[in-house]
Structure formats: structure tokens, C-alpha cells
Length: 192
Image (cartoon, rainbow, N blue to C red; front, top):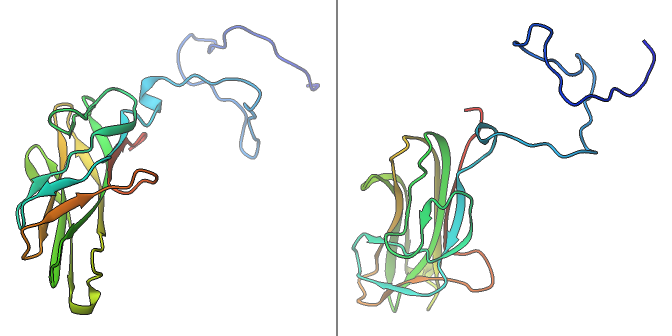
């Protein structure tokens, strides 16, 4: 068969159902000159990224929900950034969830941090870190990160909690207005 251009409006199988194969083993199918439309099952959505844009004072040695009040993106309007600071995907599947929170206890000789992504109100993905003595930077903020891949039902919801034990009455969740520092995000994994 000679090289040429095939111009059609619709490609279907001869039987009207089944699999259509473009190309064969060892070939590359180039779609760089057009626009491809994916259906909803082929996209990594719902997806969102929210961040803190102000300090949040919290109680020492107490699990406290982190308030991510600003959204960089929210493809399906599934993150509430104004009241319950919760991600409710609404679509079942496997999701990658991740969060980082910067915090500090003022004038503390030692500090321990724990961050957790809660699933349906229960501690689910957690990371801990302790600092003592010479590890403590005066007035320094420490960022703790956690992430995980989770099986999610359509009505499940996720929140981020932080606990700082600093033997200090002044504990704060910190933020940075010019870079991604204290944040929470998730996206659905396609094909999983």
C-alpha cells in the first residue's frame, strides 16, 4: 500500500463494535498536530491543590485541623476551602494524597511534630519527626510532609491534622506567600 493521507469523519469497526487498533508493534502513532479529547475516566481528576496563606495559631500537643484557605486549582470543586477544609472526591478510585505543613513552637527547647491525613474523621496516613537540643533553630519553622495512595469511595472525605508538642503555649502553623510551603493536594490515578 502506498503512503497517503486518510481523511474520515468517523472510524468504526466493520462489525460496529470491538477494538480499533492504530498502528502496530514497533510503530509510533503521532497525534501532535491535533487536539485529543479524553473522556472523564481517562483524566487524573478530580484533582486539587490548596495552600495556607496565613498563620494559624494552634494549641500545644493537640491534633488540630489545618486550614488550607487558598486553592491553586480544583478541577471538580471537591475541596472546601472556606468552612470544613475537606476534600470529598465524589468519584471512587485510587488517589494520591499529599500534604506538607510548616509549624513551630516559640522558644521551645525540644519539639515533636506529627502530620496526618484523616480519612472519614480517622487518622489514616501519618508522619512524625522530633527535634531536640542543637537541632532547634531559634524561631525556625519545620516542615513535615506525608503522602500515600488510597482506595477511595465516592463519599469518603479527607482532612489534614497537625500536632506539635513543644512544651510551649505559642504554637503556629506557618505559611509562605511566595512559594508552595504549607499545602494539601490530591488527584485520581487513572488505570489503577
